[in-house]
Structure formats: C-alpha cells, structure tokens
Image 1 (cartoon, rainbow, N blue to C red):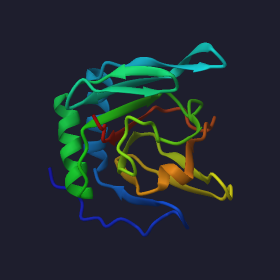
Image 2 (image 1 turned 135 degrees about the horizontal axis):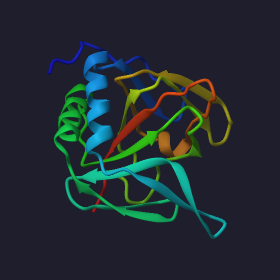
Image 3 (image 1 turned 180 degrees about the vertical axis):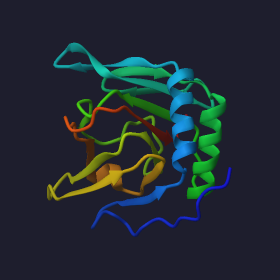
Length: 200
C-alpha cells in the first residue's frame, strides 16, 4: 500500500522533548478498513489499574502485542504480549517506513466514545527503551491530544485525525505528561495504536 508523501511538521513542543505530527498517513478508506479489522480481530479486554490499593476496571479496552511475549507493567498491572496479527504487522511496517524508527511491541486502546479518555501520564515505565520513540496511530473518531510540561505546566495540544501518525521521542516522556481529554461532543469510537520498544 502506498503511503501519502508527507513530511512531519516541526517539533510541536517548545522545549525538553520532540513530538512530530505527520497528519494522515492512511486515506480514509484504508483507515476505516483497518479500524473494522482491528475491532474484530484484536483480543480486547477492559484495562485494570490499582488506585489507592483498589483495583479499578476501566470502560476503555486494551490489548498488548509484540515480537515476543514481552511483559509490560503499568498502573501496577502486568500484561504479556500476544503474537502480532496480520493487520498489526502491516501497520507496523508502514509506520517504520514512514518514520525511520523500529518497534517491537504495540499497546492498543479502544475508546467507545468521547466520554472515555486518558488522564495525565508519561510513558516512562522501566520496561520501555529510555528516550525511545513511541508511534501513535489514530483510527476512527478525531480526538484532541494534549501535552503538559512537568515543571512549567505549559500545555500544547494537537488534533489527531483518522489515519494520522504522531511520533514522541527523545526526552519527551521525561519532561512532559500527555492525556486524551474526555468530551461529550464525540459519540463515535476511536482505536489508538502506540508502537513501542521493550528492552529485555
């Protein structure tokens, strides 16, 4: 499949990190095809997190895939990666070609509507490659994505469209938080794929 000839915009962050937004690397027909396939073929499950010692089950669903059955621990829960599906490998190869980066795993999130989001956090778990690139592919509903500097509290936001690619790299996770703000204005679902590198 041919990718659109797209160049990433300049760094979205004013300091202490590197975030590039490529825009849509998939046309709407291809993006919708992958959305439908992932919805059907991915082994989705509700995410779990431990808050103040209490196990919380989220409305959104998640899945974890990789080259090997990597363990990934976040929010005090551990997941073991499942083998890649055909569609995930196709998307991984596209993103690696587009970005020049390589990845060995992918965390997927399924948000059923705009009312489901993600609170401020950094992807800085010890299982992940230090300062490694994280590629975020968005399928489905267009959603706002925000960054907040850990010290200055300065914020930056970008609108992630269907089929679009965002790359976070360098010291971004060390210095910035990010989140997916919930909104009642969006009633359609979104799948987000974050391709990562686990170190063993």
